[in-house]
Length: 309
Image (cartoon, rainbow, N blue to C red; front, top):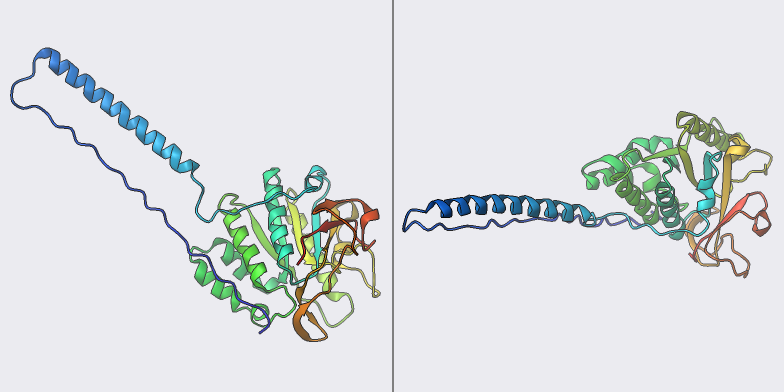
């Protein structure tokens, strides 16, 4: 087995306690009319004070951070992705197996939600995992849901970096975001392809993404996939997944880095690799650039510089 399992954080439940206040009364002698009026006024004031205190407590509890809430960080240049309403699909083309790209992807989701965009995430996972992925986001028993997902064949035997602790952390972050944004969905789009025809898998993935966009015409589809599938020009004699989407409605971002390593499969073996799409020693700030002249690979329209792996 070539991937490590993730460890789920312990869920903490806050216990709130309240304390009641007692008031004594003087029973030694009957109360005069004046004292009775004062007593009624005192009771009225006490009731009002209790209501005010209760309201303040409720407001205070609502302002407290939710245990386990997702921590989101801004990504410079991300606002360029949300300002163009014509863009329906944003594809993040990565080198599988890093820690940084899944983390950055979750921050992109946060950023889009902060800009009031409706978001649907598409992950390069087998479509047969859809029920298990839904369980991670929605099942009350998270431990049981994780066991179901980790029992899937590609999580038990996957070796190309798409099944990793980093990917599980991404899913758990999306689960936390869904507690606030109830309409959030994760869709697996690595659809089965027919035969071994070159390009058949990309065609199936492209059609799945196209159908997802048609089913969610008002959603921004954020796609995390391998960088080859996000290319917008043919190679190896066939079209890639991104090319099945309308050209004016798609935007592909190449993930670049300044070095480091990733957990990948190469020639049937799995393990750490220093391969990636590096910036070749150039000083490139962290964030998103839509300048095609900056690209290490001209087949993509933009690049997203990640921190070192």
